Image (tube, rainbow, N blue to C red; front, side, top):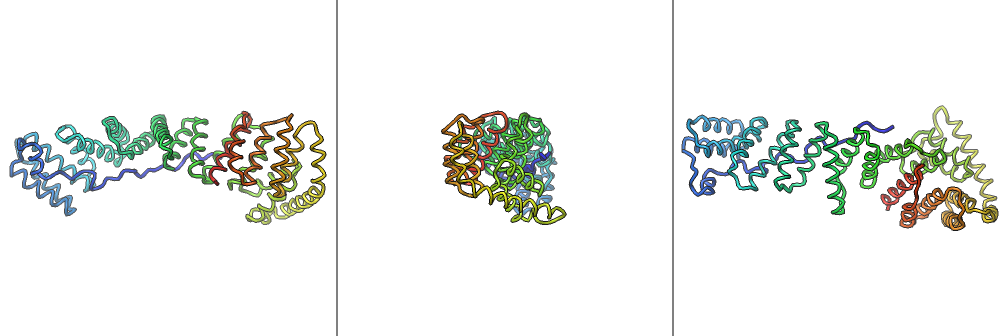
Length: 418
């Protein structure tokens, strides 16, 4: 079953830190920056200086009271109002009074008195603060403004994507995340797990199966966890046109990735292997089920035992005649018999012989399903530890019936386990 939600980072990647803004430069420094043209009267400057000291001592409520005292002076100049708002914003931010901080920061930005780098930091702070109070449309607006004005803090991209997502704008989230993905690809890096899960969930909510599968593949490639393998393999199985003959092949990668779960899955896979003339593989599947504690207990324990006995008996009989079957397979007009015999040897752990026979079968040609043959050769290479060769052959597998999808999944597995 496809999960309806993926985890995403609700916690903001950018925290409000004491160092984001300077908390208001000293009044003397402001006067120097302006060449002395802008001044602050003592009746305003003294309480503001007291407020700055209180902020340094983490007495934010007392600092706000001092700012309020300064703000109460009548006939303030534009510059005095600007300095009041700058210090009030810093105090309010640290006091946790975000509405007040927002109003003050917006006033500071609107005054346009700061050097561009400082101005940009206030824009960033507004984006963060709006996100903190869950006003995602405003967080989007200020994040976008920061980036358009040349801001380079990559975490703002994270904030922007999360804001789109939490606002329910999954198209916007997808657009932003894909841009981040392209930049990461160019840098030879991977996006954080939280970003990729958000991308997958955004595609899911838009009913974009192709985008969902692509995001899952990215997740599995970078973070090969069972929780991402499960929906990816389920996507393959539920895709239109998936061929029933490939169920055993799909179960093989489920077993390899730990996504073959209940006793019913193990029993069904073992029975498919038996029906396909691969008793050695069937025996191995049952053995793994017992080793994992999935088979051998519960109400169906007797059924499990009977299947184990059948697999062991069938494997013993098959192995006694398997070597003789090579000549018969080689005498066939097509290479299908050699491929199947090679698969049979793989079930007994004889990977070298299995690989050789499958290679001979493909070389002989006239296979009924040549793409299946290449898929099985890739599987054989993986079993033999030849992952580079496996990836090379699996990349050539084509088809819209699920064969190519399973091949891509094996490529992801081979790369993740390298």
